[in-house]
Length: 238
Image (cartoon, rainbow, N blue to C red):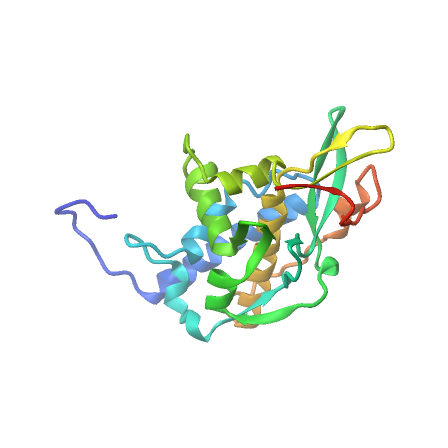
């Protein structure tokens, strides 16, 4: 947002291309760290995705410089059930003596990879749903960047989203030992999926040419449990 009387200069498309590649370069680097076990490596990337995609009254997304109406985006989501996590599975890790119960994205968890128009991909397709909690990519990135702490830390945040982060919405279950398991931080897996879809889509559209070799298997091998598919008999918090 410009200040009154501030001298401004119109930027050309070369700047747009340069910054698109800077953004995707950072996303690729962070994804590599995440794929190697740093589950906090994507923190802050929602702000980059917001700059890339999110349109508001006061700002225009970088993607607008690249004719998004002609852009098709890969999607690994195709939610069909009342409670649907899409291509995510529960995973348990042990770090510093503590268990971490969370979710992982893996393309192999998806029934199919589809291609959508940019508008449908960003504004309409749900990446999580349960009852009244239905989140699109736009909503995940907006709340994560503007409220949770990626770009702003707000005292009051979207309740549906916050409940999903803390595991108050979604599956929870009991182990044989009687321990209650409440997986948290689904947003990390969703953001990893959005980044993966973004990089593949941009490479197909020849917007970027940086090499990208994700390793979704490593984190799976670091679990203290085998991949456990969530089943309807698990308890559900709404």
